[in-house]
Length: 269
Picture: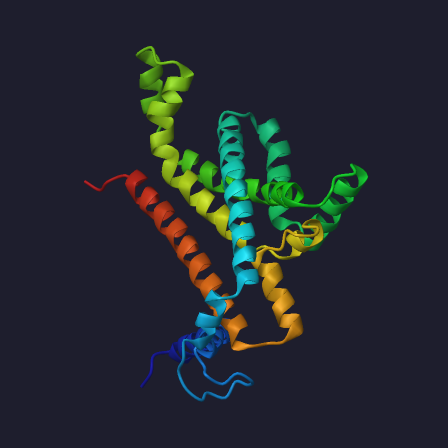
C-alpha cells in the first residue's frame, strides 16, 4: 500500500519531466538534424558531417562569427571593468544611495529587449550617430553592465573585509590593497561575470538588429537571414556550434562562481 501523498509526488515528477522535455526536446532534435543526410525534411535518412563541411566553406558565416567575437570581446572588457567598478563603488554606500542605484542597475535586466532596442535606436538617431560597430558595442555594454554588477556584488557580500583592514593597518594604500588583497578574492566573480557577458553578447539578436547598420552582421543576424531564405541542415549545424559554445561558457561561469562560493563557506569543525 502506497503512502499518503505518494501519488502527488509521482504526478509532480511526471509533470517536471514533461516540462523539461518541452523545453529541451526541440534542442535535441535540432542537434540531431544537423547530422541528418536528408536535405529537405526532418525524416532521418542517415548520419553525415556534410553540413559541417559546407559550413566550414561558408565565408559569410565566418565573417559574421568574426564580427560577433569582436563585438563580444570589446563588450566583455568594457562591461567587466565598469561593472566591477560600480559594484565596488556601491559596497560602502548608504541605504539611500542603494535605494536609488539598485532600480537603475536592475532596469536593463527586467526591461523588455524591444523597448531597449527602440530607445537606443532613437538615442543614436537624435545624436546623428552612424549605425555600425560602435553603436552595437555601446548597446551591448548598456545591457551587460548590470549582470556584472549583480555577480560581483554577490561575491563582495560574502567576502571577509578583515584582510583588507589588516592591509590598511600595515600601511598599504587603497590601490595596493585592491590589487593585492581585494582583486585576488574577487576574481572568480569577475571572471564569471565576464563569461556571462560574453555569452549574452554573442547570442543577442533583437537589440543588434536595430543598431547594427550595414556591414556589421553578427552570427545571430546571419542565422536569421539564412532561415528567411531556406531552412537547411546547414542552419542546424550553425545553431549547434553556437549552442555548444554558449553552453560551455555558461557552464564555466557557473562552475567558477560555485567554486568561489565553496571557498568562502565557513568550514565545519
